[in-house]
Image (cartoon, rainbow, N blue to C red; front, side, top):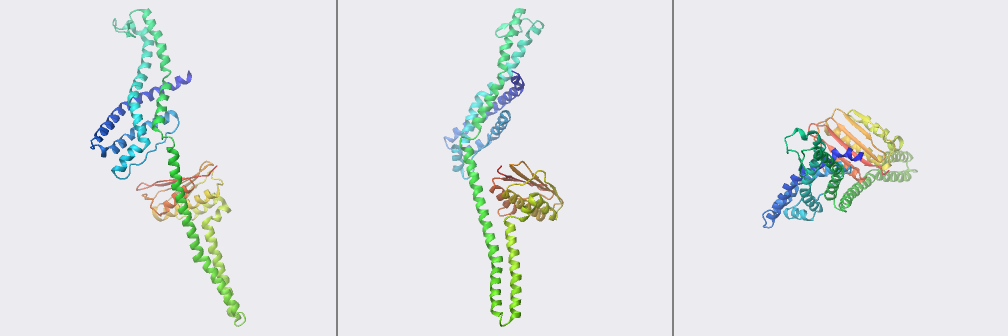
Length: 408
C-alpha cells in the first residue's frame, strides 16, 4: 500500500505523458499509412524509408521514458538506411526493428490516449467524490450530479463519499498500469530476440579482424626491424670475426681491429634488440608498474602534463601495455598538432575497467583518419573489447576517453 502511494505520482505522470505521445503517434501512424498507400501505386516508395526515419525521434523518446521508469536500459538497434533506393526500401521491410516500431505505434495510438485520460479522470473523480459532502449545499440545486443521480440531500452526499473508495482503489492500481505500458514499450521497442547477440557478434568480428590486422602489422614491423637492424649487424659481426680469424697470423694488428669492430657492432645489435623488445612490452612497465611508466612519459612531455592516477593499481599485462601505448600516442599527437599549453591525464576506474581520459586546451578540430594515430588508438582499444570516444570541437578543448576492460 505504501509503495503504491509513493509510486502513484510518477505513474500518473507517465500515463499522462503517454497520452500526449499517443496523440502524436496517431498522426505518425496515419502518415505511415498514407505513404504506404501511395506505395501501392509506386508514388510513395522513395518516401518510405524517410517516413520511418522521421518517426524515430518519437520512438527514441519513448524508449528513454520507459527505460527510466523501469530502471533498465532499452537498446536501440536499427539496420542503417544505406545504399540505393532499392536497398533502403528492402531495409524497411527486412529490419525487425521497423516492424516492431510499427506495432508499437498501432498499440500506443489506440490505447495510450485512453490510459492518459484514465490516469487524470479516475484520481480527479475520487477527489471529487470525497469533497461532495463539503460543497454540495454551496452550489445551485441539481448541479451536483454523480454516477447518474443528483446530490440534494445528506444521505445522497454520504453515498457519494462512499463511492470515492472504489475509485481510490482503482487509482492505487495506476502504477501497475503504468508498468504494463512501459513493459509493452520495452518489449516492442527493444531489439528483437537475437538482434543484440547478432550485433555483438558483428562487432566482435570487426574488432577481431582489426586486431588481427594490427597484430600482422606489428609482426611485419618487428620482422623488418630485426632484418634491417639486428640481423644485419649480427651478420656483420660474423663476417668481421671470420676475417679476423684469417688475419690473425698474417696481420695480428688488423685482426685485433676487426675484433674490436665486431665487438662494437655486436653492442649496437644488442641495443637494437632491446629497442625491439621495448616496443613489444616496455620494460618500464615491469620495473615501475603502470603508474611509474605513465609518470615517466608525462615528465618527458614538452607540454606540461597534470596527472591524476588515483586507484590505478596493477592491471593485466596486455591492458597495461595497451594503456601505455595509447597514452604515448595521444601525448605525441597533442605535441604535434594541438598547440596546447597544458594537458590533464586521468587514469583510473573500477577493477574491471581501466579508463583513460586525456584533455588538452589546444585548438581542437582533431579528426580520426585511416592509418593515423587516433585510428591506431581505437584499434588497440577495440582489440581488448574496449572503446574510444573523441570530442574535439574547433577551438578546443580536445578530450580523448579510452576504456579498456580488464577481464576481472
